[in-house]
Image 1 (cartoon, one colour):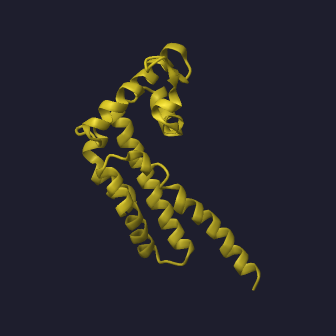
Image 2: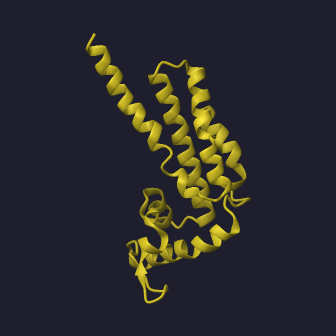
Image 3: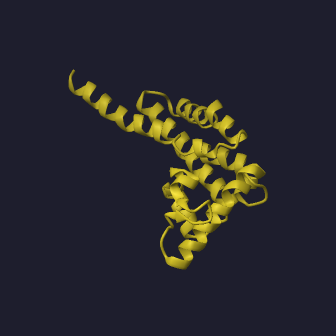
Length: 166
């Protein structure tokens, strides 16, 4: 619970919509694309793969990058979540998953429960994370949970095999 509470405390103004997580440049650049995607999804019932308003048209993935088809982005577009809230909750989710994954990995590797919480908090608020948030590179927070979570799952396999060979 320490990790979601600490991330929630850090992002509380953004999660409640009182303050934007991102700088105005980021929101100004990406919000029109997300609003377009939301409008087209409502109008046609499917996610758009083509955006005709740029030059003579271009693939949506090329305009926004492939993160536009990331699961949390799709859910936010489908349900019409305003961009500033979508980015705030997306960041909250990914930072929590990153910290919990690091915590579980630390326990698997033999850390005490309190040591594992410290490991999870350290990973969650590492330099990469805080730098990404300060420089408005929110997309860097999306892959963070997959690193410790994957190692945690693989670590359980390795530790299990090491025990079998004795």
